[in-house]
Structures are given as C-alpha cells and as structure tokens.
Length: 465
Image 1: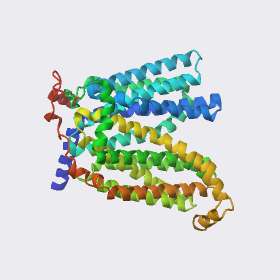
Image 2: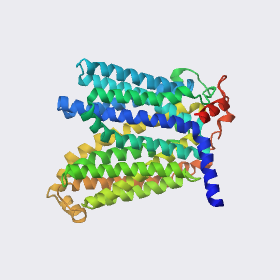
Image 3: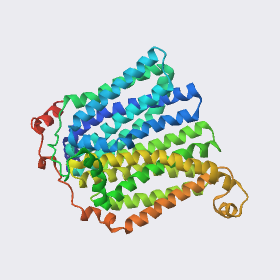
C-alpha cells in the first residue's frame, strides 16, 4: 500500500509541475489533428483535380520551404517577443487562411494554387508556433520532466499523423471539403482557447549577444552552435533521424506494392503509426535517464541493425516488424535530442537555436524523398534486376529481383546509422557533452520575468481550470 501511495504521490507531483503545459498541449492536440485532416483532404483534392504527380509533390514543397527560409526570422521573433502571444497570433493567422480557403470552396472558385498558398501560410504559422512552443517548454516544465513533455509532443505529432488520413478519408466522403475546413476551424479555436485563458511566465529578454542588430541576430544561432560542436552534433543526429524516416516512407509503398495488396500496405503503415504512438507514450510516462547521450547512442545502434534486417530479408513480416520497432525507437531519439537542447541552451536564445534545428529537421524529410526515391527507382532497382557481376554477388546474400534494390538501400541506410554512431561515440565533444557543457538555469524562477506576468497567478488559473 505504501508503494502504491508513493507512486500516486509521484504521479501527482509530475501533473502538478506540468499542468500548464498539459493544458496547452491538450488544445494543440486538437489543432494538430484538425490540420492533419485538412492536409490529407486537400492533398487528395489536388491530386483528383489535376491527376498530376508533380502538382501533388508541390504541396510538400510549399509545406516545407517556410520552415527553412524563415528560420532566422522565426528565431529572432521568438526570442524578442512574448512566446504565448506568438502562438496565439500564429493560430489566428492559420484561422484566417481557413476562412479564405472556405470562401473559395463556397463560391466554387478553388484552384490548386490556392491550396499551395494555404499550405505555405499554414507552414509559416506552424514555424512560429512550433518554435515558440518548444522554447516555452523550458519555461513551463522543470528540468526533470522535460523529457516527458517532449515525449508528449512526439505523441501529439504521431496521433495527428495517424488520425489525419484515417479521419480525413471518412470526413472527406461524409462532409466534403467545406465540412473538413469547418472542422479544422473548430479545432483551431480549441487550440487557441488555453493560450487565451491562461498566462505563463515570459522572460524579460536580456540579449546576451555582443551585437543587437537584426542582421547579427539572424546569424547568432549558427554562431552559437559552431561554438558548441557537441550541440551541433546532436542537431545533426536529430536531422538524420528525419532523413531516415523520409527515406523509409518513400521506399515502403513501392516495396510493399510489388509483392502485396493495397490493404496489406495500409495495415503495415498502421503498424508504423502505432509504433510512433507507443514510443511517444513510453517517453511521456518514463521521462528518460539522467544521461541522454548513452541512450541516444544505443538507440541509433539498434535502429541501424533494424534497418539492416529490414533490407536483408525479402519477407514482409521481417520488414514490418523491423520498421515498426524503428518507428517505436525514433520518438525516443528525437525526444532526448530535443531535451538536451532545452537543458543546455540559455532560455534567452532558445528561439534562435531551435528555429535552426526545426528548419534542418523539416528539410531532412523531403531530402530523404528526393535523394532515396530517385536512387531506388533509377539506380538500385534496375541494378539488382540486372545480370551484372556485382548484382549477382550481392544477390547471393540478399537475393535479386524486384524490391531487392530498395532492400539494399535500407541496408546502406542502416550501415550509415551504425557508422554515425561509431563516429559520434568517438568524438569527445559529443560524447562528453553532458558533462563538459553546463546546464542552463534549471528553473525560470532564476530568470527575470516580464512585469505584469505573475507566475503564481498563472498557476492558480490553470489549477482552477
């Protein structure tokens, strides 16, 4: 009984510490799911309207570019302005985009380029909103629970990714495009409400750069990372995780379709989504170890082995189990990389640093599409079907024929992960990062708070809700 009481007390303490974050997170879960449903529905509409793979691919381009192009500006704004209001304004601007798109649908004037502009606007809002939210976790959650908060953020993204296509397909047939847009409007309102109702601590910004101009600030995040190569290494590991996921996504559909039905493909993709959700939930409950780098090395090592297994065998069962386990481990890796940044980077400059990290993560997924997709289609697949000497030699190990070129690509991708793990564990600045680089101040209480923002009042408001 004492053990149960102790566990309940510990759980209540975690909830108490994270209650502001949980309230905001709950609203953003609705907003992210609504956006995912709309994104899927509009993607389907564009493809059915144009029947063009190129125009369909442009959707991803417009949804990614703002993260990359606006990264320096997003970082400056996040560090200089009130982060809560950045999130509110971002959601309101996304709402205006929904209204505009809805008017085009209402008057039967919707064109594909309207969807591209809407995606670019939504991605711009998401760039500001996501950077401000991740930078605010350090303000809302104490150090020992930031791993759990980041795990819940991975869960949010995983749920939106899984529910978006499932619910989007249902709602698109049931309530059509105009109904889907109205649904997202409702979800955005639910996401904005917690941000309007409560106020959380906001830093009184004390710029620690030697230069105060916007131009200097634009390059400050990069200069900061170059000064701390260990943090730069963690950021590159994080982006490599996204590159791997993009590569797996572009390989999975053609690999499965060559030997199985669309129904089997859907079940396999559902397994991958379930792996992401389970991994995110596990981190949300666990929170993580005292030393993150050792777990990061271990996860990268295991993921490399899983990718080698996935490509080595021509069995769909082996492929599905291996990639599902990969997707389960991926949130662990990303969460711990993010937590290291939150613990080590000064709160006053997290916006500028996080915006660069998010931009690199965002571009890594389409990079996987653009690099691995053509390699699979134009190089490795024809090569492993051919009767060449090297193909026959490799084929004695992994087999030849349709799908084996993509299998070889998975093996190479896993080998890259193993090599990067070896190099990262050898590099002292990365291996000793958590001991060499001191933590930023653990609590926001040690930072100056903006006048008029009473932290205790904010906590009381959240408790009342």
